Length: 169
Image: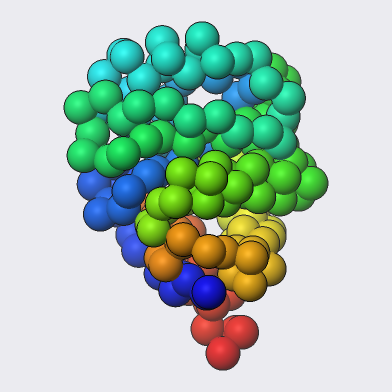
């Protein structure tokens, strides 16, 4: 089984997928950026449930309910520790952990933001290269996933992720 990969620009809380992924810190408190948008749209209950499941190791992931969001769950992928720094290794591990949760719950669709490019300061082009490569590498193992969406908030992220996909064709 293989899933399609889509690149869209917009608000991840509005993506039509069964789950959305939050680029989290390992304590799972939700600050600004993607986490802030998820908490604002879905409610404080998402953060409370996440914190109760933490702390986790950077590179791991947990899931919570989606509060007022129309999704089945929010996957919280710890792409950084309390130092708010990330790396290519943590981005890869957090993606695989997120895919594993989606597969464990037999989800058919999941949306990812650009991991670590906000507070984590990770370069967007490197992030696009890593995330698309990991998604491609996971495709042969996917059983339930049919659709993976990379949702980029800004035009630069959208362009770099799109360029990475186009370069592979």
